[in-house]
Amino acid sequence: MRARATNMSGLLNLLRNNSGEAGDRPIIDRTGFTGHFDVDDLTFAPLTAAPSADPTSASDAPSLATALEESLGIKLVATKGPVEVVVIDSIDHPSDN
Image 1 (cartoon, one colour):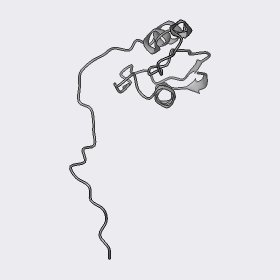
Image 2 (cartoon, rainbow, N blue to C red):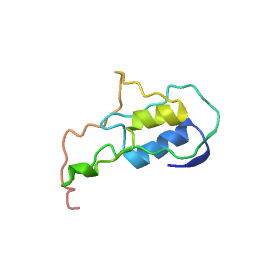
Image 3 (cartoon, rainbow, N blue to C red):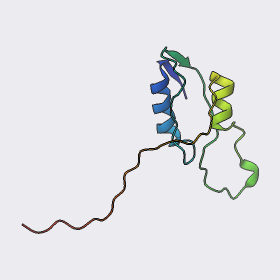
Image 4 (cartoon, rainbow, N blue to C red):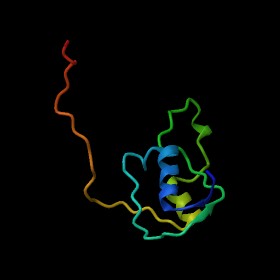
């Protein structure tokens, strides 16, 4: 992953587009950093890899958390807090008019 003159919001969007979220957890920026920076080569192992028939073909890339900390000095911290969700109670086919 590479980015030029990005900010934390841009980095989070890149991460979401390339990895979904951090497994099943959302990634939220609580750094307070408002500047811009370059990401030269952020490489990390896929979060949800399909099982391989050859166990020796596992990726040598670090985890997302390790890659962020080693490359950018950003530490992912698991925490509990409110998360917005959408709940659909029921759904029906539209009626004929």
